[in-house]
Length: 259
Image 1 (cartoon, rainbow, N blue to C red):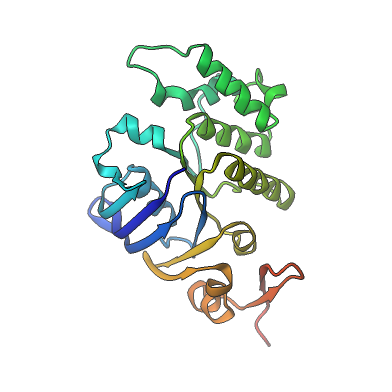
Image 2: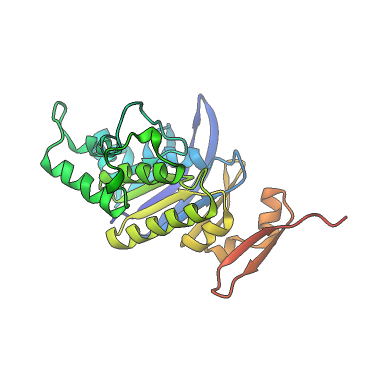
């Protein structure tokens, strides 16, 4: 289990700051959804936590500054799935998921029996074992998203960073994937940070939300605290209603402007 702390984190590309002044505390085993309009800096923030873009400020995992971790140690501790993952040609599902074991291998080492056993276990948990020998490029969108998640889980990292994991999925497959992430979080005690465009799904699965706009945090807290009509309308420049379901979940509904 890995607790995550950010203090005044800023990050960007080629001298341009894309996100700044981000601070939060995440207990181990919790789920934070980073939300915000297009271009708000959500993906950049995840890349900064993963150590993939230069950043300033403080990022600590289990009390240790991630900047002080060697690259291999960081890859063992942090599993990252980009919004548009690179899908190499010619790989089977098993080959692809085995890439998640790379941080645990020596410089010239090949996968051993333990690595293969871990991959087989992950494939079974994600209901992918029947597709193990299939070419990755022949999978449906939902199957491919599960394969990407399997690669991350094969790392056995305590912190999972998932950038728009439901991209391209219909509502049923998106819900099934997030249910799977939540179940794995409960079973493994992993800490989860996702970016999500769907505010209703974010409200139903995440413990806390962080709303970014123009690269800066504008609200952080529970879904009830962050997903308020005036906040969503202002930062998304949208006409919306925020409702509450019978189970107490927030639902964000777009509405046409009054004529």
